[in-house]
Image 1 (cartoon, rainbow, N blue to C red):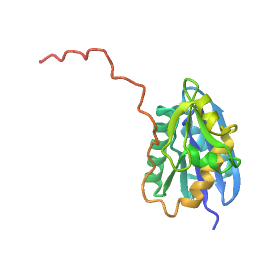
Image 2 (image 1 turned 60 degrees about the vertical axis):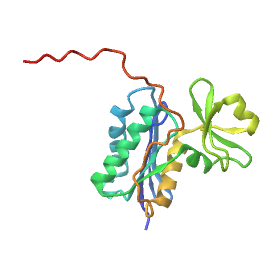
Image 3 (image 1 turned 30 degrees about the horizontal axis):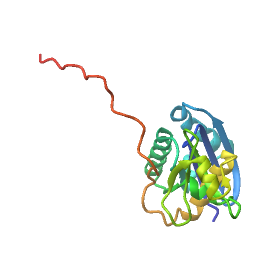
Image 4 (image 1 turned 90 degrees about the horizontal axis):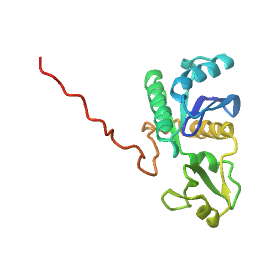
Length: 194
């Protein structure tokens, strides 16, 4: 059987999606964008399915990039994957950026995901993931950074194809650091009794 896997990722300044049947890539697309992933994701997925001549009901599983990366982008993808999986009755498989980069990283390199302020997310072999300055990470090993988001989202689909039969927990965001966001300083409006 050649499973049909739809994968997507919005953990960075892009909206990326791929459709695989077995080992064959039917379509892969990446649209660079700093904002607007939530508005674009579902229509991009529908375009990919239509181009391949398949429907939502033909899918065997969903693969989704769970981070690390942009907090809002991760939540967009994870919530979309969970909703689609629930509605379609198929599994959704969460794949970290380290796992997807690991499929193509040359030996002796350290998969690294760009982060704000000249930092990168890294995971040394048996250690917990961490956020470090890029220059410090380069001293550990040569960095392997994502060069082609299409290649990364195809890797997410390939990993999902391997795991979808054994996945039992829904995907969840993979955060390494707390959010930068702070509660609103605005005073809430006064509620008047009638």
